[in-house]
Amino acid sequence: MLDVNGAVTLRQTSFTVSSNAASINTDTSLASITGTATATVTITAFVPTINGHILTISNNTTGGFSAAFSGTTILNGQAVTFVYTNGSWKTTLGSSVTATDIYNSNGTITGNRTVTLGANNLTFSGSGKPEFQAPVGLGFAKDTRMGIAAIYFIANGDAYGMEKVSAAQTGTTDALRVFTSNFAGVPPHLAFGKYTNATAFTTFARFTNTGLFGVGISPTSTFQVNGSIANAITVISADLTLDQSHKTVIIPLGSAFTVTLPAASSGIMGRIYSIINNSALSKSLTANYINLAGSSVNTINASSCIEVQNDGINWYQIR
Image 1 (cartoon, rainbow, N blue to C red):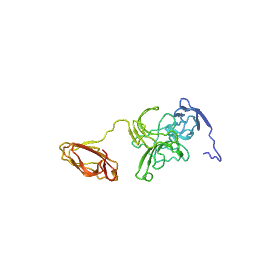
Image 2 (cartoon, helix red, strand yellow):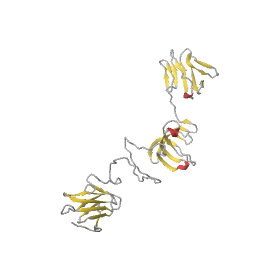
Image 3 (spheres, rainbow, N blue to C red):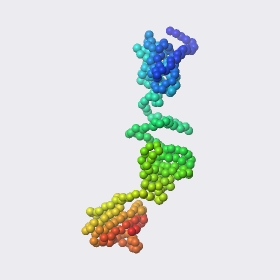
Image 4 (cartoon, helix red, strand yellow):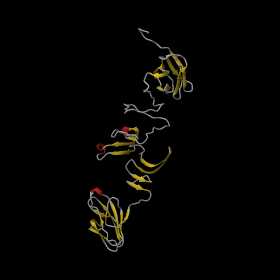
């Protein structure tokens, strides 16, 4: 038995990394692994003549990589103590505990974790990209601004991105907002299109930062399309009540079917229907409309058509 009234100092011996490997080939109690590493350093060690030998390994390499010895990862800048027993080196951390450096090794998170940034930024640089695999995806808290964003000068609204907001912010229902900048210089826009590479993008549609929307064109009107427009068309084969799925309705020759206009109300204000009567007789609708002469009528003459629009109170013939 050794009884020491004071400190015990272990003499440190250095071992230099070569090709991301280091051999502790000298009988020592404190090994410092030095040199430059470009990957995880594999460490081997001498075999003691008796059980009970204690060895502390300190990973002092440059490059930021971990070291591996006897099934245990030694993080860069840290030291782990091992004891030789029953013919092998075992860590004093316990056989079930392995330190993992996520920068150099894969690992498994064992519970929820919170990183408190304070006023600091967490930046990912380089040509690689962070990936969030299905089915979990990437989540962000609502009403926290910003969800996923590029922020240049938030005080001036110079930010681009996407965020989840609640009814408390929208005034109606929860929403997913996609937004462009409010930059006062050259007004940015919100583009929808096809990505080819870092410098090539084909724009199919866009919102200007004043709310104009264009398809195939930079719009100068609230809604502008550079191309054809398709609307629903229905040739009726039974009585039909018009709803949000209809636009053009044709009453075929010889038909006795009835077309029902929905009641004019603010809920469908602005809706337009085109009704064509191919029959040789006039047809009556179930609701009146104000014709071009300003009279309230409910008929469509034979072999004619009308287009009506709802102002929230009445249906008006507009052509």
